[in-house]
Amino acid sequence: MPAPAWEDLDEFLDLDDFAVPAVIHLQGGGTVSLSVIYDSPYIEAELRDAYTKDDAMPRVMCKASLVHAVRRGDTITVTFPGGARTFDIKTAPQSTGTGLAEIAMSWP
Image (tube, rainbow, N blue to C red; front, side, top):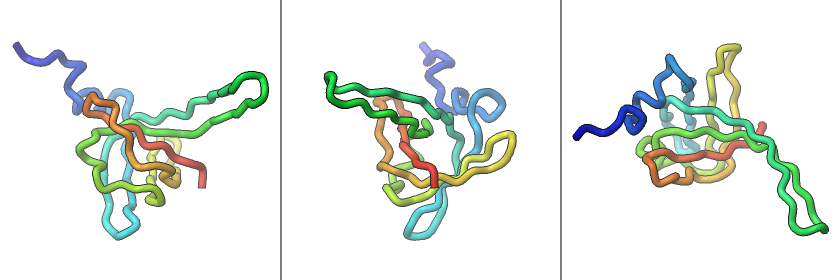
């Protein structure tokens, strides 16, 4: 039995649907071109009554197999319909266990 369409990462990351193009610039030289799902969540995390932290860290989801060489300190240029924007990569890609990886970014 073939895998359901939603399990095809290439179809999920199709530029005609939700994904946007991006290019990761590696510190040691080289680039990685890929399709990403961009997200800029707003999270307010609370630790008991003593501490509240607001976090609006942008992030992208992409194919994990394409980002094995990506590290903190690399940059990523995401091309939105209104133009391109470059971000600093804050952490190494984190696998979701589904073939996707999440990359946390920060505003430059």
